[in-house]
Length: 207
Image (cartoon, rainbow, N blue to C red; front, side, top):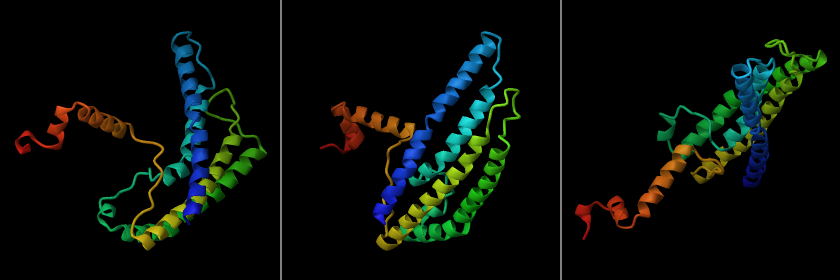
C-alpha cells in the first residue's frame, strides 16, 4: 500500500505543480489589463476571461495534490481530540459516504457539460472577445479523475493508520510562509550564542 500511495502522490503532485504555472499566466493577464486600462486608456476584451479560466483551472487541478499533502481545511475541533485509529475509521467511512459520491457526480456532470461544450465549440459570454472555453470544461472531468485516484491513496492511508496506530507521514514539499518565518526567527535567536540560553532556560534557572 505504501508503494501505491507513493505512486499516486507523485502523479497528483506532477499535475498540481504543472498547473501552478496558471498563476503566472493569470498574473500577466491582470497586470497587462491594469496597465493598458489605466495608463493607455485602452482596456482589453479578454483579460477577465483569462483570469477566471486560469484561476478555475488552478483551483480544480490542484485539489488532488492538496489532498495528498493534507492541506484542505477541516473542522477538527473534535477530530483532533481522537486517537489516530479513530480518526482513520471515521475518515474511511466518510470517504465512502460523501467523498466518492461527490467525486463521481463531478465526473459524470463534468463529462456531460464538457461534451456538450465541445459539440458546439462554446465561447465565453462574459466579454465581447468570444474567447473559446470549451477546452476548459474538460478540466472538470480531469480534476474529478485525479481526485478519484487520490481518494484511493487516502483510503490506503486510513487502512495503514488503523493497522499501525499512526498516520503515514505526508510529504512536505510546501510550507506555509508563517511556518518558514517562525523557523527562521528561531534559528536567528539560537545563533546569538548567550541569548539562546534565555530561550532554552530562563536566567533564574541557570546554574
